[in-house]
Image (tube, rainbow, N blue to C red; front, top):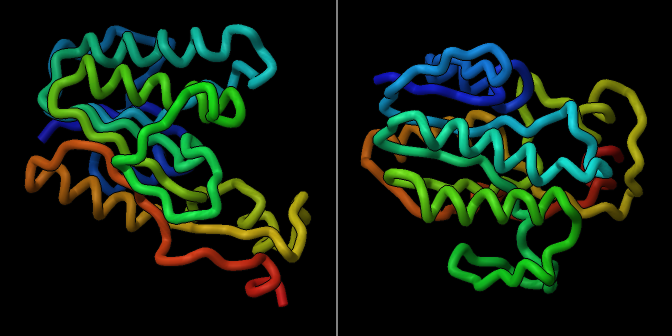
Length: 196
């Protein structure tokens, strides 16, 4: 099974590349394969800052390069940040108004989600909460290494492990699943619960 994976140099993408035996997509070094069985799109352009006016353009451009590679399934790693916080459990079938989405990162993810669902073969969108794993570099991993983070003891978190995302992707591939799915932990916790 040939899997082409964007974002294979760090974080979740690196983990998925190793665990699924995926071929790393190298954005700036083509040539790109003409055909693969599955594309997993994890990459997010770290060279373009969120303040940069080209942020949305770069995300759409990368998506267009990937979608033009012939594929049987396209899996996009998104975020639960696309939901407008409403103090309730959020569901994949919730209608999301782009005008209510907070921040350009979440807005851009939602725009790419919609393109994936409309333009790709057998699309899967995985909306993940905070990710943790072997190559994580975020506030929680910084704290676990004795570092600091701009969070308070009252910060509410929801975490999903790289292994859980990989297991769900494997099920999507094995059972030919498509659609939109939230990949989140069973419940939220306060940072004070883990820092003592």
